[in-house]
Figure 1 (cartoon, rainbow over the protein chains, first blue to last red):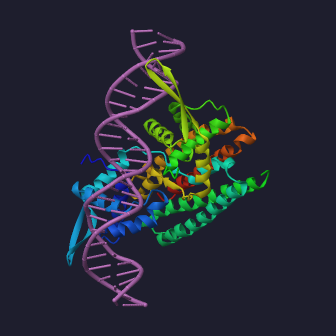
Figure 2 (figure 1 turned 30 degrees about the horizontal axis):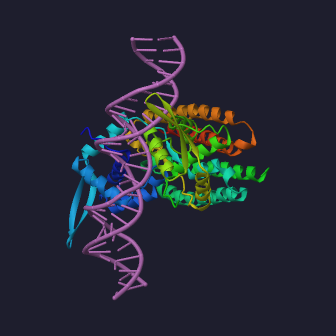
Figure 3 (figure 1 turned 120 degrees about the vertical axis):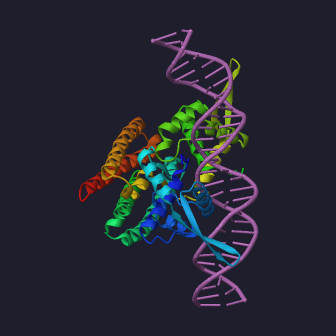
Length: 186
Length: 186
DNA sequence: TGTAGCATGTAAGCCGTTACATGATTGA
DNA sequence: TCAATCATGTAACGGCTTACATGCTACA
């Protein structure tokens, strides 16, 4: 205990906790990466595979997860489950740790700031391209949302997904307006 | 040339470029930190002081900025200006480098995902607190926006600031809706 | 006289990435 | 049999933070 874990560790622990209340088969590092890619990446970061394996090793060392190993030829596959101590630690983290304000790394906004160093058509094209990518992301997230349905068990993941969808819609509208603004007096 | 700089380097170079077209007094590392804190932090990250000094040393080494040193007792103060090569490098970066999709690290959304591990009142309180902090941020950003006015020179920074304001407004609305949703069937 | 703000830097270390290395299983 | 997918890990290193160390200037 008194573990000093990163937020990413707790995010992974959260994914393992969802597994424990649904299938409870445990998750391999590989599967955890897939879940991160499909959900976590929308509002946190999807860690690299190597990072996930590193975190799982660390979480195991402090007893927050437990692997069940199965031999496969000369190779071992590990399925990880959250432990009671791990769940307690997650609760503790949610209750006591400071909630940081979100951090946004927005390359499009950063470049727009320097729009006077670009051709106006380049600026407009950059914004239009961003709108298209937002639409792609939205499709992916809608897929996640649809898979959650309206069941009580997924109430919170559904809220987060709806939040994300509304965010993409708002961002699209705002950037659309900026594109219009580029059209005038350029 | 063919410098391998981080986005943060170019962000700082961008701030120095704005200085060059306004006062052109050059900026100290300390002043650069202040500008980062007041503007950059809304859509990128405000680097630590030590990071800024490190970047300035690096940018100077590759000739993208140039310091003018003045002695103060046994201490040297350096005011940095962007060089012609630096401006060229910034142009090059804007024209040729890939525009990454924004990355959001959103601790509030991450925690909401695990709302089933918290008391409903705690969840609501967390969301309400976030809305208050959004309002604070909005005030800060509105200050920045007001200082930019409607002059052509600050057209792009003004667009970015307006973007940020619209984003905060949308985020506030969305989270307000989530709070209402917490009220029902909790 | 002491403290707040201006100003500059080094050192240790964490978090996370990319690159590299390896092996098992399934299906075209 | 070959490629894709499942699966696990190490090594090197970059970017950034916190902690630490130091000094000048203005003013209450």
